[in-house]
Image 1: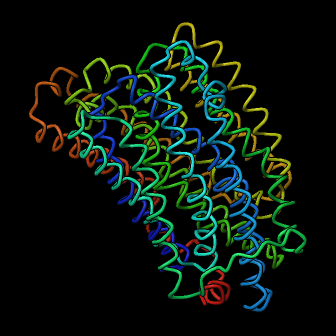
Image 2: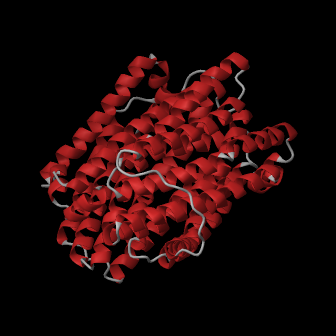
Image 3: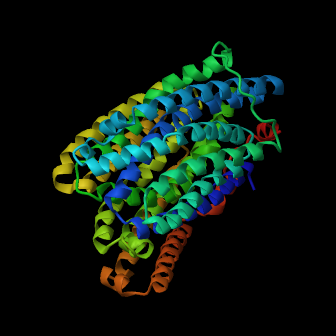
Length: 522
């Protein structure tokens, strides 16, 4: 089995476990807190440092750090690479610490900017500010975690960084359950975020002792390697910010909608994140350092084959995931969340958003992989321009859909703009001849579309009405849901085989850089 396929399997497996624990967290939170305004306030307080995290830590920083670090591991001595890590660690620690301190004092103004609809509701506004001050230091922990994860990934150690998010979900579950002893105070979730960040950082540091010494923070803004990362990061920052600004505009607009809207959007997005993380994020995490190495070596054929392989995975898995989610949207929500304080009305409202996001799921996955092809070649400007275009589309559609479709209109706008983004990126790769598709990829697309249409027809004909799911016992609901998921997968795979496509082919269609993998693995 190819090393690349094995790496993706490791990331997907641990990500599946992480998302599974995350679902348990969401089920517990839905039961205890429902879609109450207090949970809305927590989501806003947590989304703001998450916005910064995705913007700086896991966004621009990772996209700048991983390609440069990959080149250092391949071309430089171990001592030089470790020195670079020390200096970047020190600079990152200093800069993010300053941001956290400043944010603590200006928290009321931050909430005014990100959720202005809360200003007129003193109780909700005050609660959000209090929890923001608790959760914001999480940005420091997750920034250092993002850097350590980049080191793990460049050395082809994928298990520990992909496993660490389980700690966040586990802490949230424990704190949510503990809150029941104190009147179900949502502030316990905020403290759980900080606890989880500290534990995640310790977990990654302990794991790193096995294959590399721990970073020794040094501050040196003049170092050439540090300047290279900062230069590439500044170029990537706008591109990443365009995407994240789009997400925060959704929160901004949703703050003016009825209470519960942000919670409905959150639960829908959480369910959409499961296939996105299992497939696209797993593939892009593994493929970025490989494509970076292919480009550094000038091996265009390997670059093309590896990118086509990643695109084949996205097409063959995203389509059935999106259609299956669309068909089973209410059974999924009823099975997972319909108990405790999460009402049938909440199920209905969340289903509107989830259907819209299911429409955009293949596009979200396409963006993840396509962007890796650009960043691996140090081309930051093109994704920035495309992202800016999609942001304009997102804002325009959000304002158009909001008066009639409410929170679901925001989800539909995000999904539609994602298609503009993904298709534009792929078109540019094709027109610039960075990617030259083989005849096989066209056969894959045709086979997958045909198979997924048949799967859709069978599922819609067999899935019982909503009232049946509501009347069922929880265990029976779960068994039926799993049964229909397996049925849909079985139909899809069976029809694909009739077209001559087999998922086992993916294992033998990868162009590995074995010497590189062995070298960076240490």
